[in-house]
Length: 252
Figure 1 (tube, helix red, strand yellow):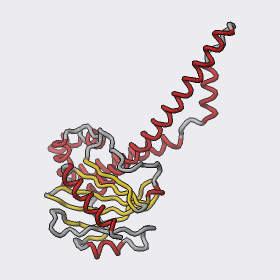
Figure 2 (cartoon, helix red, strand yellow):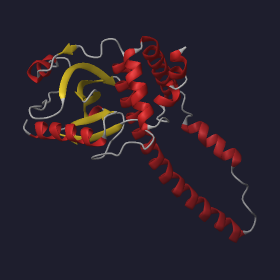
Figure 3 (spheres, one colour):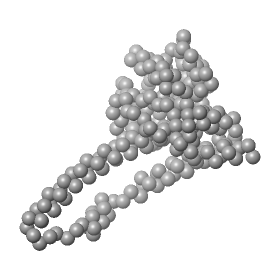
Figure 4 (cartoon, rainbow, N blue to C red):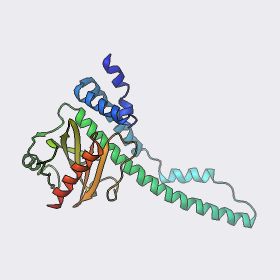
C-alpha cells in the first residue's frame, strides 16, 4: 500500500512534472524499491516504443501534398486578388518552412535530452547499474577499449567531493557510447559520452536542455565527442563535474 502513491507518480516523474524535492524523493525510493524501479523501467520502454512508432509512421511528403491540395482555397477570378493570394501564399510558405525547420530541430534536440534522461533513470533503477565496478579511473577507462569506437579521459577526482562508482556501455539511437556514474553527497550523476557525428540530430555548442526536464544537465562538444552530465544533484555540482571532464579532455 505504501508504494501505491509512488506508482501513481511514475508518469509525472518521467515527464518532469514533479517538483525538485519530489523528484529527488522519488529517485531515492525507486533505487531501493524493486517494484517501483520495475514500473519505471516498464514506463521508459513504453515511451521508447511510442517514440520509435512515431518516427516510423511519419506522414510522407506525397501525403502532405495531397492534403494541401485538397484544403487549398480556389483562386479568385480577379487578377489583382490572384496576385495578392499568390503573394500571401508565398509568404505563408516561407514562414511555414522556417518554422518547420526550427521546430523540427528543436523537437529533435528535445528528443535527445529526453532519451538521455531515460537512460539515466533506467540505469539507476536497474539491479546492476554498472558493468565495471571501480572507483579507480585507471581501471574504468581501459575497460571501454575495444567496446566503443573512440577514446576519452576520466578526470582526477582528488580534492573533489565526487567519487566514481563505475561505468557501462550504452546506446543512443543504436550508436554505442560510454556511461559513467558518479556520486556526490548521496546523489548519483550520469556522464554520457558519444561521438558527435553519431548523434541523431546536430547539437550546437553548449545546447540548453528543455525546461521541463526533471534533472539538471550540462552538455558540450569537445574533441569530436559530445558529453552529457545529468542528475538530480544541484546545478553547481553538475557544473563542477562537467568542468572536471572539460579539463581532463583538454589534456588528451
